Image 1: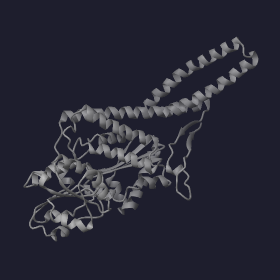
Image 2: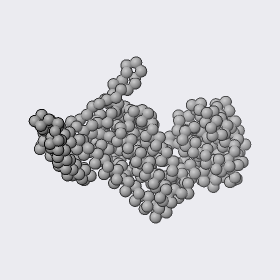
Image 3: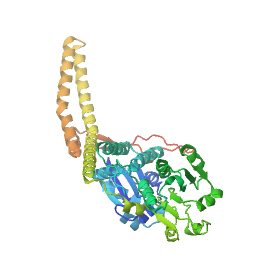
Image 4: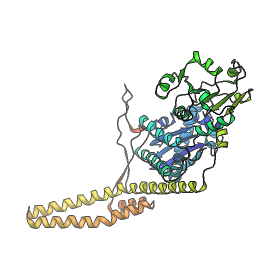
Length: 446
């Protein structure tokens, strides 16, 4: 596996640019795999403050072409020019990409350090890629390792033990801005029914909020409240709910944006309003904050208000991430030796069987013949031991190519390096579009 990640996050650029890159870019992974690019697999991780895509390519020399293809497809899907996207996306490869994903999953790269919500988003990104058929085996192992690392950070350090998250910090800000700090009496309207809306509902229950209504432009509010509580809103009941609302919370990121003019036109009788916009692409018009009696909390507000975690906890967490990164990278390098070891064993097995057949032909199934065969097989195992160990040692040092080259030179072997199945080597049914398994491989020969 050669890994490439392209990252646009709050750590490097403003959230407006991240939002523009994220817009309509959810299908980029499927599109690049269906193109003529060298990309074998891809997983997209999109959250409230980042857009990242992780790709697997066959060789190091394919990284540049893979990056160009992803940028081109994001440009096509968002309408942004390629130079803007190229400037915004930070490229990471190999160990750097692994460490970054592990840090992200553990909440070390979040606006709220140590937040636990991101770990769930990493898992969902993998699940969605698997469902879409864009995740190779290597990428599956990478994201699963990121999830394990996040659990280790959560269980072995005090980082995140306070339960802080983007949502919790936003609700704390809303509490500070409220005249009445008791959430029991507040009328709350949530926009959206996704993961952030679910996390918001859970935290509102913890704060004993009772009067919660949910609006979904896609019509999913009934199903959402059926399992989480609250009242479902539709277009006919939304206006009345907004007129009596104390707090509105945007979690959808849809095209249905609540405008400042919409709020200004309501008969609210001077009632103060707090608008919490957790959507990267803005559920609420930024001009809402300029209206009299309206306070607007957005993701930038959350980032500025997020408390710093303890330095010792951060050091411990980063140590866990670094250790997990090194272990995963070593494991991947050792996997590179597997094909070479298999080729060598297959070759020696063929030579051994040919010689055994000669012994059987000359001596038959006698005790002497069996002793000779046993001795030959024991000698072959002993002869293969050192080359096998050496293969894994060289692979762990990133020198598997040297070993493969030696086998090709000494024995004239072809070492077949399997390419994980991807959409580009699967045949589609012309009627259903269902994908069939591919069996392509790349062979290296002397």
